[in-house]
Length: 239
Ligand SMILES: Nc1ncnc2c1ncn2[C@@H]1O[C@H](COP(=O)(O)OP(=O)(O)OP(=O)(O)O)[C@@H](O)[C@H]1O
Image (cartoon, rainbow, N blue to C red):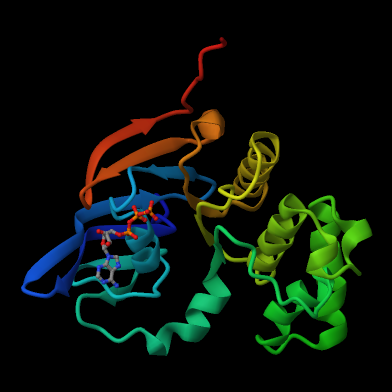
């Protein structure tokens, strides 16, 4: 028997009313992501990339369509998502363009907090946070506050925080936008490693063509619809 995809979005639409007109932010998009897969979402500004992540991440309900996580129907049109808060915290890790760390907490406290909210005892949470940070090459930074960290380091702390509850699905919205090319690639390489070693399904919205060779698949959106899908890593020709 083949396992159900980690994430399955079916015919998802999200329409917003804007004055007298309707904005079709998403207009019938389907997407499956399997364990260990790293998928890129590409598309021009306003094409619906963030909306797709919000729906996949159970932060917004679709206006039409449904979302399954590991085969279980969790979100569909018109359903309230408040009841899924715990489910979301345990199963889905989010990484955003800005790291959004809490400025008065150290790196390890920021990561530990994600576990303490989930009732992990503080000492265990701190120990696990330090292990995660060390695994991301930040062991020496665990005691630093965010202002003492570079942009790339802050983003790695945010990734450690997203990994804290060992999610099966990780959703990242332009996580490398604030980073230079080399640091951006390091972040995507980290996602590649996490997909390979933990079997997480990972979806990354990106504008950066330079790291596309690290992805298993790219999906291109325009005007809320999928206009292209490519399997297999994109090989970037040497210049
Ligand atoms: N809450 C909202 N109310 C009304 N319109 C919205 C809302 N959220 C998004 N939209 C519209 O839906 C469309 C898709 O937005 P979305 O943020 O998903 O695009 P995006 O591809 O992520 O863009 P960007 O690359 O600029 O972040 C846009 O036209 C946007 O203005």
